[in-house]
Length: 456
Image 1 (cartoon, rainbow, N blue to C red):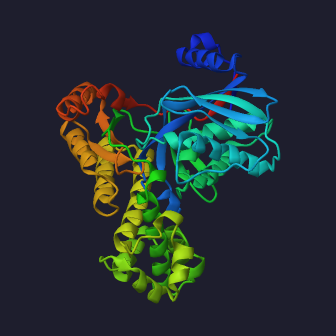
Image 2: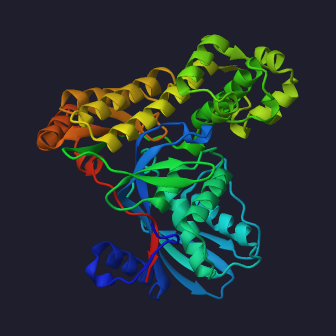
Image 3: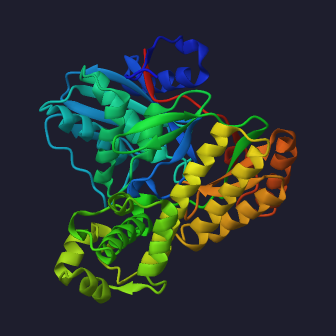
């Protein structure tokens, strides 16, 4: 795998999407783009809500992506436009500090997260003036990482425009950190796969240090993505950050229960590392040390020996200050169980047993049950869609992405793909007038795609 994002020469007229973007850019700015940048979305096959706890995940990039056309100028401004007329333009000064309004997560603030990350990494006082048009084929708020792909694309654009160079790993880490300016406390999976993906393979993404390992998926089945058509914007709600906070508190409670220094621990993986325990042993510890009933603020403060003020400032995030009760047992059980399923999934892929497709499907089904019951990040429409997918011939189906809406991913034997697509369309999309006709945009076969790149 190349260390830096590749630069590709391409014939614009040979690519309809690029040609359309070029035409839009020229209509908007009266000149052709100087270069283009692309960052793919992703589908997470297994390993949900565990990257921010320090655990490995197993995603692959998909063909839908964010594409940007860019020209440089001496205006002292960055002008952003979107090929979709539903999204408004935005202009920001190149010399002023870039302000991200986390209470108003518009599309251009995600782009500016990537710009801000590069600006701060290199200490650039005056960024190059840019005119940009952004176009995307990733459905928004669908769990396929449209937001992170936008941040990554912006990071690529800003790096290239300011004649800087970074490795894929460095770009992924910078974009993961800078996306937190919008308010979501993600763990880095989305940015990592957007940059580190390679065509034809899924990846095991590990953290601290960040690294990606090829995972060869078994022959005989494909992954089909279906959208339940319920949108969930992570930055516009507290659902996501509440789970991050619950895992942070569970970390400290488990550390305290085993006499560890809970003050310096923030991620569940740190407790396992300190105890030199297996994931099965951590699950037993969760059952022993944490009760299933929700914990109150008072109970947590007493157990950790902290004040209510410390609880609010050290454990809660800006948009979770109103929370009063926390389900620690359920969240920790999900994380340790899901971390084990990721390793089992990779082991099956590596060993290629005869029944590998069925075994991977079983792990995906277990993952969805855990997301639904323990992490409570599904929704009725997603559960309905997953059930329809299983009845339609999938060996394994689960929500993918943050949840509370968005997409399911299903593992479907090759010989059942056509009948599966037809059955899901008829059972989920056709009966509901709100979804009728949406299956063409909401149901597609996914193959491992390529990572972020920029080209001229």
